Image (cartoon, rainbow, N blue to C red):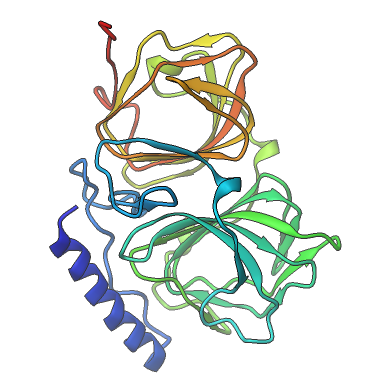
Amino acid sequence: MKKTAKGDCNLMGDRYQENAAQETDSPPPVESIKEDWGGDGRGRANLSGRHTAISKEYMPRQYQFFDTNAVPEEEGWRVRGMPESVPAGRRRLLTWHDCGASTSRVVLPPEFRAPAGIFTADLEIFVLSGTIQMGDWQLGKHGYSFIPAGVRVGPWQVLGGEEAELLWMENGPIPLSYQEADSDLPDARMSEFIPALNSKLLPWNRTDTMQFEQSKKKWLRKHANGGGTWLLAILPHYDGIYPMIQCYNEEGYCLAGYCDVGEYRFLKDRLAYVPSFSTVGRHITDDGCLFFVRVDRDLSQVGTVIWYPDKG
């Protein structure tokens, strides 16, 4: 990722934040960054060029697997712009981009309450445990929501008297903040809004690549460019035989089971950040596993995932 692109994005983000403070009836004027595999940013996930909890520098073509439980937890975390009266939560920052996009594990306390409002950047939420209420909708374990910038949501509330833990994915390309609002912004992308999706009710479908024919996939959201967010179930007794070259950016989070990737055992609560054109080790599992996955390219296109025979 070129430094000029990061600088331009930060500059546009600063201008938007200034404008937003003065005028809340206009949508974000900032376009997503271009993907480092050559994409035009239409997927809006901004997975290119990220730092991670185990690498403060962006490392192109080098995948990074790590245990998110080992990442230090930030106490007193709150969404920028929410009133001080809203109870603070906790956060583990897992990956991030200079433009403002990030992926975190967030814990909201049982007493969490927040007013209805809008976000200044796109937000994805996946519930790891607990239940939250967003306006008229509830999200339980493995529930999913996609909230485009400018769409009014809430009021927010944690239900059941227990903490709620979420994968909290701020998609940028500017730092996310919250503004109380009575209505959607005029040009908010309402057609993309996914208020509450119960993934347990979705059917399993085939995957898009030959390497994972022994797997099943549940789409949660599909990007304009064919990438998206989904659940991936790798069936027991899977063996990918060869390493793979992945010609796209990926984030994967293990929800259950395990998969050996090269010499790394990918277990529950491990995260993978795989930059484009990384060579990723052979996949093997005896017992099977379940992953939450985000990618920024259409994997059904020829050449996005390539077997790479290991001559060693």
